[in-house]
Image (spheres, rainbow, N blue to C red):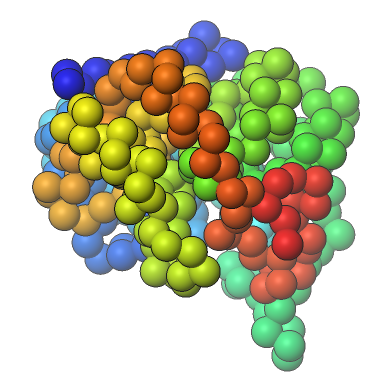
Length: 311
């Protein structure tokens, strides 16, 4: 089964490569991993201020020799810089670390605001983040100004509920180009995804392999070992992980798997292949409405209140 190089359209008219390379965790190995990914053919790199990997991503892009214009680069505003006055300094710091003068997409990482200051994770004695009374609508309006300055070509959101997204659309003037959220065959969020598409919001899957990440524990068997996915994969000479990626792409979404090993980095890129309509329908049927990532308790903010998988 031939690997494709699918590109998807954003509401800005720009194209986003369907398979991106995620850089969460393992900061020390990210420069090598991103360089490996770029060599393998990835042209969509996803990072975030909180990951601490922006400098490594920047160095890898520089070392790769690939023109900046050929790479779709995404990073995210962290919660302690939600105050409108902090948004431009935040993107400036990210741009400096990434060694570039613009982003292709800048996302608000969470709708929750933390206390302003130098600490990225300001915590109280109870270990819960110290939140601030800063409205995400005001934060987003400050992000809209970055479009005019050319510091980013598009803006978007991550980890928003439907009600939060609806309010954002009502009270701001730029429709988010993308919404990055946990999505995989065990958490398909069909209604929310369909609604988002009608608004012109592109969907990106983070954690596209579900509970593959050890941080999520093991309340279920591994998604990528799901018999439905592995059986379908055999027809195409693909594994369960590649099938999970192809399923997302078939729905018109981008996916951002992460890996440190060259073999897996290449294998994930080969997750861009065409599934038959029947196989797609079969995978649509294995939704467990199971969410693995919910930071509500530690962030002092109730996320995903109206979405599938909220416990």
